[in-house]
Length: 205
Figure (cartoon, rainbow, N blue to C red):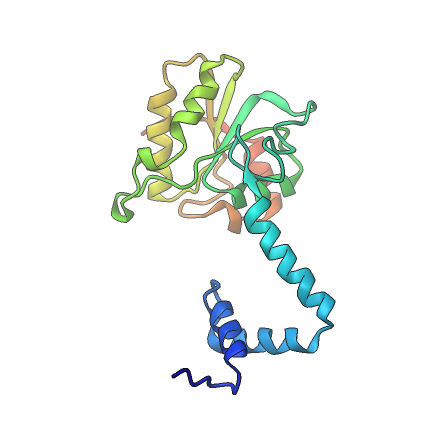
């Protein structure tokens, strides 16, 4: 028989649900649940609708694989963006970080991760082939490898460089304003913006 710790099975379920979110422990989950109980019913309904819409209506852009409300994201559908440059990143948070700098006007390609044998992640688990398909159209003149400067990121850059080496395009990487071992999402906007502007040719070691 269910014996709720909080004298309410419904509250217990809410706390358990919040606890499954990253960085939310049982105490924080309880605070969130009690906070919602104190709010007007409309606020709780708005939150529930927002979460439901997020899960059911948000899609991944058919071109770059960034999250979007439509099949083609606002960046890919923007006629003012430079279609000849593609910035390859690990995840959607990296796109957001670069966009916040306001210094990049090209397109993106989200790999969905980086090569990490220890975690069982290989090239087949990433959106590599869709990137190659975009390059085969012949409209791209430069690819920026803007991956985290970790060992896994460097390995992924080298793999992509080899895959793209037969295409007639410029392959660059972000400048070393982003130190080795850093992840883009934790780099300040000024440093990241300058690293993109001062990008350099990728030279595999």
